[in-house]
Image (cartoon, rainbow, N blue to C red; front, side, top):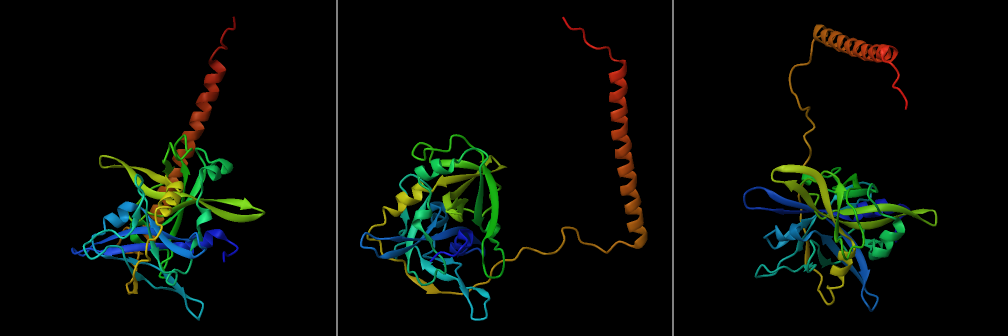
Length: 309
């Protein structure tokens, strides 16, 4: 059952994906959990991410960063290993035939939160929401693998639609978002919040799948694959078995809290000199602004009015 705030539900449903590599590094991405019903009404839990996230994980299991609520009211990081490859290394996930989307069934137990599949925006939803260039969208993910806290919750950021046209998804399967993408963001949900009967409701508009680059230059623009293609991927999963899940352990990385510049604390005299230099700079800027105003005023006085014909 959904809580009063759909954004919190989606935060609960968003998880960190990690697979250690042999060289001491790790491949990290983002995924989110959906719940859908089979034709017979049986609920199914699905983990969704970008296809390239799973493809770049050659080992058979991925560590999924679920959380659990302890009796004392604190959230704890409770990762689990989800098998994504078979005995011969073959993928066990379902891939969209043309878009960068992947999905795999998982047992319902480990996931604390799951978003109903009807929160995925269809072409009609996008028209109703009047999605257009400049529309602000929210993005959940794990930039550079970092989480918001020790419990492993995702980091929430935002950007604006930077391309036109956005619809229909059948013709424009992706759209651009003015958003700086880091490694670890791939596979994260992109969404907007709309009001339905006076209650905020999330509409997942897509999956963050790519960062635009020109050679080595980062353009600080993300590529988002429309949520319609997630729905299409789910439609290909009929009869797929749930992946094997087993408990595991692991700590989350932490951003370095140290200041960018290290060194001894400044003395009182150094702080006084710094303050005086700042004051001198401010006064110089003030006189410069005043000079510009005076100059423009005088020029206005001495410049003759243009003749009108």
